Image 1 (tube, rainbow, N blue to C red):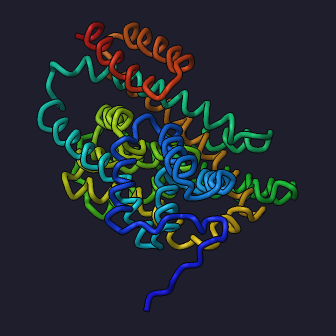
Image 2 (image 1 turned 30 degrees about the vertical axis):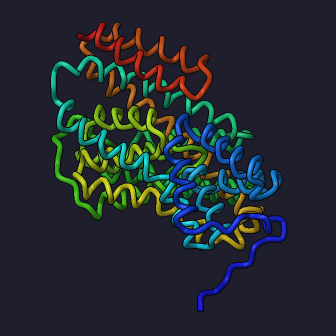
Image 3 (image 1 turned 90 degrees about the horizontal axis):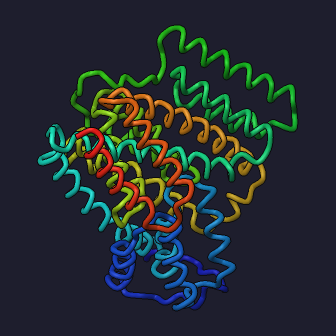
Length: 401
């Protein structure tokens, strides 16, 4: 007999739906999941908390805080958790699949269309370049938004700056992340924190000097990707998605563009398409996987990215809040999040540079970029990014031909 999971007393009113009914409910959420995580979470709250009373509003707020502290797309993790409240772990799996499948299939269709009809055709070059410039502006805005929440004191700012510099010289991704977590957890012991910082700096410089780094060769030839490598690339992105899906960009880019599996332009096109689909933004990994390795590559990257989002809830369901409330773990996560801000900041600079290199005229690229940057700072609402991407395509067509 299977073990029955204990349900918290305050969640006793959560309905026990049929498995098919549960899957279809969250499939409905997935079909309507436009506008990014804020809009997706608001939709889940309105339907399951305010309307159907699955759990209390206070309980939902605590769960959301936990999901935001963990890596992975928080809207998807909330769906997994809510599905588990209704029908246990199998319910969590079905809820998570229901939420992600509409965006996954739409992205697969978009990737196939892009690869078959758009990529490499001169008629689309200017429009795609305009889109890519707007996406770089969106990423820079995301760095600012993530940073204003993650960088709460001077030490976290220093960790972000170290991660920024380490990433620019091509230090392996794990150095700033491990250093950030450890240094901040020992920040109340200055000599230990200083020693850890010096070790991290020395290790970054040493690995850079002997040529062991993660620098991205954006102008190299396109090479064939292995399915296992693509799965690991997605898993790395899924495990390191702190504070929003934009933080997965450096790691998926390093393992795809960095290995010559696709170009920076194609990667940015995938991020743009993900921004207009009803799905968590990390679905851009599906696009990268398809361009790099076909159908098998798309499945591999998607499985890697979403595996942590399922695993944390499925494995830690009964203890999730208690685990994340641990003060020691909280400081480690805060240090890692600060380092991620620095890494994605460096990535946005690299993307800006590589996009400028592809532009026929720098003045045209600068005009679109500065206009887009001002627009993303002022624009509000869930439809702002898709609208700006469409305007970017039109501007690129007009300016670059």
